[in-house]
Every structure is written in structure tokens, then in C-alpha cells.
Image 1 (cartoon, rainbow, N blue to C red):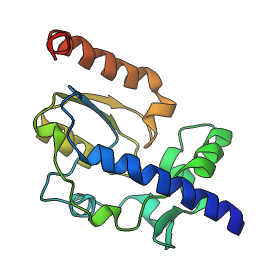
Image 2: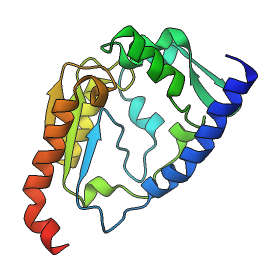
Image 3: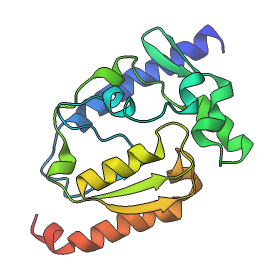
Length: 180
């Protein structure tokens, strides 16, 4: 990748940082949450401390930390979204925003799953976040759980399952949403 390409990806990452800050807050307008192959640390945990309790996934052998970011090497994309067609995998790799290197050691400002009804899509073939960590998180938060034979990007490879999770959560909250 050229220096210009790296700079463009870094600039994209900085724009996303503001979005990350918004996600850290618990907003009263949010009435439910859908987690998709995600980490869900408690206030006294980090993503790294959660992941340390489970086997290291394959994608962690295919990353490089540089310029304060975690960059997935091209050889790692199959571990991230290997159930997508090759062309789509390349689009995901080219457009993914590399997270800040310290993201995995930051504690969240809050754990919205403690106070918001949640659904969780467990990706059983995830080689980025261990599927047993998905299951642990879903159980701990009392989430309605959907298991799908998918890699980390279930929202791309199995959008039907993700839409079911969203629609079912909305349906279960309709009385709450009407009065919120």
C-alpha cells in the first residue's frame, strides 16, 4: 500500500474516533442493542482482558501495529471475513478502518448491555473474536442469542440473521418504544 493509501486510511480512522466516543456513552434514546460477533466488556474490563480468557484467534497472527494503529495484513482477511466471496473480502480489507492500538486496553465508560435489552449474533466460525467469547458475552448480558455459521462479518455474509435479530428486538420493545 502506498503512503497516500496509508494516510487516507489513517484519516478515516480519525473520523471514526469521534463515532467511537459517541458509542462509549449510554444514550437514553437507545432502547435496545444488537451485538454482532462483538466484544462487550464491563466497565472494569478491557477488550484485551476479555480476549485473554479464551484461545487466541487466527487473525491475531496476521496483524501489524504501526503508527498507533492495528493493521490487518492482506493474508489475514480470510480469518476476518472468509465466508465472503474473494472479491468482497478484498473490498472489506481495503475499506476497513484500522483501530487505534490502545483500543483493546481501554475500559469502556459504561456497559449499556446492563440496562438495555439486547440481542447477540454469535458467529460460530469467527477467527477474530472467539465464538466462546461471543457466547459468554451473550449469556452474561441476558441477550436473545442467534447462532450463525459465519466469520466475523456476519452482517455481510448473513444479513438475514442480523435483520431477524434487529426486527425481533424491535418487536419485543414496541410497547417500550412507543412510550420512550
